[in-house]
Amino acid sequence: MAKVETIGPEEYAWRLKTTLGVDASPKEIVEQAHDILAALGDSLKAQVKAYSGSSVNTVQEALAFVMKEQKRPLVDNDNQVLDAFKSIHVRIKNFIQEHQLFHLGEEAELLKFHPTPPAFNELAAMANIAAPLLDPDAPAFFLIQPDATIQSLIQAIPLAVHEGIPGHGLQSLWWQTHPEERAHTVRFLCVPDEVAIARQYFGAMMSIEGWATYAEVLMSDYGFFNPAEKLWETWTKIAHASRVVVDAGLHTQQLSVPEAVDFLADDAGWPRAWAEGEVIRYRRVPLQ
Image (cartoon, rainbow, N blue to C red; front, side, top):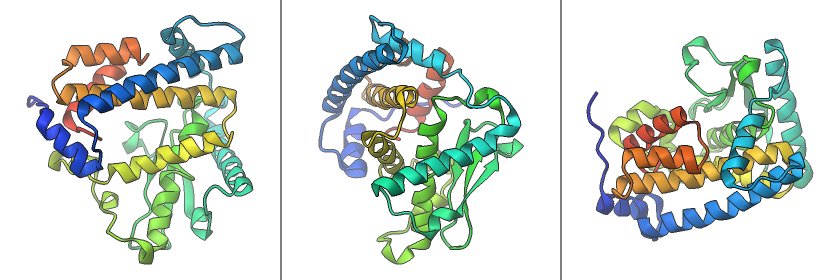
């Protein structure tokens, strides 16, 4: 395997400004991320205490509690998984309409639920296949692993918000059905991740992942998630802030690979094998 190099502090600062429009320096965004992590850690400890009735003394204990809760299944049997996610999206759409958070037009009905094909088994518990831009009658797909052992009770709904409606699913369907309101071609729908990695084209990430993350935050701010789901939503925010620390640290050469893995595993509470894989990804795809 070819050696994966980091891009260096000057290139990283240039990409921050020109690709993402961020004027802050790498050092400043890392400092901001650490401040966010401190606040989120206090919030998670309080949530764990309220949820479980037991106090935790450290953020690491709170994170470990969330990972233990993450193992609780959404449903008992594989044949219940698909219907469970259809019901979840009914709950999501009803909440959106009640609070008028997003416009759900006819395009929202084009989201289809489908078991993850065997060839895609390396995907996560759920994923999205974007609606094709040039066929306004074609659906977007919400792919679901029909394996009850990997569908988590606390994880399912926050991830459904992110991957389906109002996240990536609604986003791609809106772009597909409203071409007259697009200022620029949405290239990410035609660029597989493998190609983007090779060509270092991830210019649309701010609007793509940014939209899905915004959808999660807005739904949370309006009280959509129950206490169990809120635990995972807070864990996700901690994961996002941790990624900033590691991504910037690696590419500005302030963190070594072992230090980055240790930070994700020890300070952010990630399973070590996952942390090792994520560090490889961040080295290959800076600022994703």
